[in-house]
Image (cartoon, rainbow, N blue to C red; front, side, top):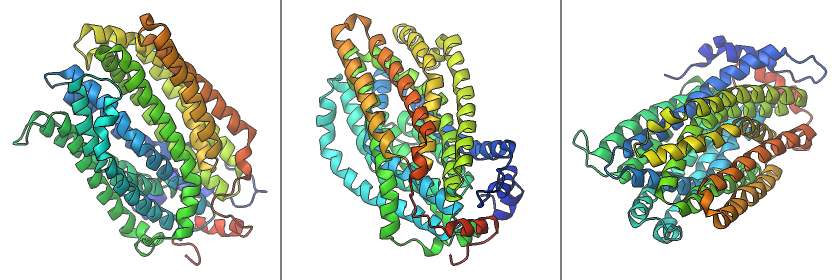
Amino acid sequence: MEPTDQQNAHHPAIAADRHVINPDPADAPPPWTADLRHLLGLSAAGVAGTLSQTVMSFVDYWIVSRLPDASAAQAAVSSAGLVYFTIFGFLLGTMLCTTTVVSQSLGAGRRRDCSVYGWQGFWISMLYGLLAVLLWPLMPSIYGLFGHEPAVQEMEVVYTRVRLLSLGAAGAGTAIGHYFIGIHRPWPNANSSIGSNLLNAVLTYGLVLGCWGLPAMGVEGAAWGSTIATFFRLAWLMWAMCAGPTGREFQARHTWGFDGDKARRLLRVGWPAGVSLVADIGAWAMFLVAIIGMFGTVHLAATGTVWRFTELSFMPAIGIGHAVSTMVGRSIGERRPDLARRRAGLGAGLNVLYMGLMGVVFVAFGEPLMRLFCRDPAVIDLGVRLLVFAAVFQVFDAVAITYNHALRGAGDTAWPAVVGAVQAWTIMIACGLLIGRLRPDFGSLGPWTFATLFVIVVGLTFWIRWRRGAWRSIDVIGLQPESVEIAAEARLPGPAAGA
């Protein structure tokens, strides 16, 4: 059962937020402790949601590792998952910016607009999903370019084709989930993620290994489990959006139609973030599939396993980043850039602390961690060394994640997209490919060196961009002078006047 508005009023994070809203720039800002409590409250739901997604990835990976040809299955799921997310990346990055327009609308007191933006994400995603199905015939040719073993290629093609069926639903679920994050009620998003991942775990186990009367489908079963769970989550979120007091307050049952102006505003701020995510995920996919793939299945399996452990670090950090994004966006809607700056700094501190500790764990417990998934001594030995590289860039990754989300909350998405893409493809891909060709005796350690350097550079870059403050001059939702007075109504229960 989702928390009601009455319950939210007594929740520490939500209650604290009622004192955070301050439409008059001349007024003193709230204590930083109130911001920290609110950030922790929002982050709890964000971390729960992203961590459940990480657990789903871990579960899928662990289940396919039970198959007879475990190394091939692990390599196929890792590379096919990255290719799928490369295709999904533009839509995903665009829909993540639903938080930007919704949170800024909330800060400006435009509650009806919040649900309008949520629905525009739904319609845009469904159209994108229909177009993505056209890629089905191209999958064998795409994987044929990478030169993987035939058995691995066959599993990669099947897995990606099945996952493409749920791409539109995944984007729509992201949009509506981030609508809830944007209105500072993130638990429906988190709860739907947890529920769908539990369903995915059961379905994947049964369909991969052939349990409980279900057919044994191998890697294809993992794809079907994820696809069914994705549609389940979308249905959950749509019900939560339209039902109960929240549905009435934001009038979600009456704003479901297409709105060209709101769709354009969402796409305007979202498409650079989508391009950025495509470039980022595509770079990591190229890194794993093409560059690491040059060195064989052992290197693919070791890198794929290390990637699973880095997910345990960066996915919760992304959950905190979502909280930073919506707090920054709401501050912009309230015309309080001073609060936006302070709230981003608090989020950066939390992420640096968490990811720094994870880096220590990677170094101290490398071999036991690898043995959780691997039985091949060569894969374990290589993975232990690769975890050291991952440990080195944890703090810089925390900075990059936090300030990328802060910039997104402020609507500054184009500059990070261009600069981040250039850095990824020059430092990690071009240099990684070059060292792989010139010094193959280094194995995957050579490309991993440049991947580490890339994360360090991009973290410092995003921090400098935020500090320079170009985001202060960006107007995403068309703020007017009267928005300052309207924002005062956001402190009152019920829809804003005129909504």
